[in-house]
Length: 48
Image (tube, one colour):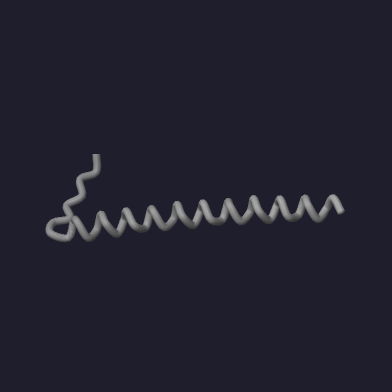
């Protein structure tokens, strides 16, 4: 197992990692949502 010694900066480091993970998840969800809407719009226009 990896042992990470962060000392007095541990709270800052783990908070930064956590916020980064949250931002990546939000970005991924947003991209998937936009792709789904673009696909639906494309299919709607293709039927006309």
